[in-house]
Length: 131
Image (tube, rainbow, N blue to C red; front, side, top):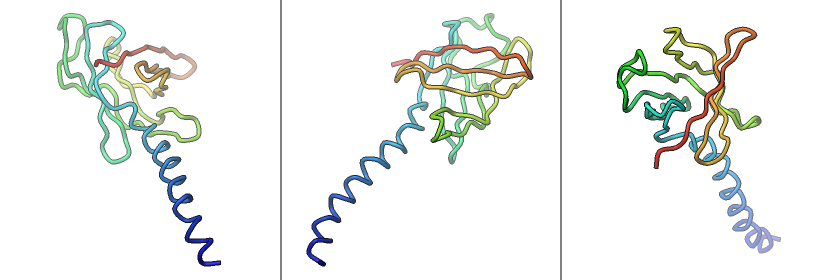
């Protein structure tokens, strides 16, 4: 009996590492640099504890937006393992000078869709990963 358990344990451990490792890596797919839909802005998304934040790393056209480099434009997003999206965060809308509730969805490895919600209204934008 002990011998059988010793034979099964390495396989069980390997399966846990594979499946748990995949689950843990999905939420960090968001990390890195992203180019905004306008093409003028590079956003750096990082994690602090279990929450995700985004700040402007580079502005190619300073007149395009009413924000400065280093400005926080995404804050407090948490990964939802069941829905595979980042939720409960806020997105900064430069034209309105306000933060709105938002969600982030990974479209593919190099594309994310960010949706800001204000009551019944919402607006989505697509960002591409910067290599």
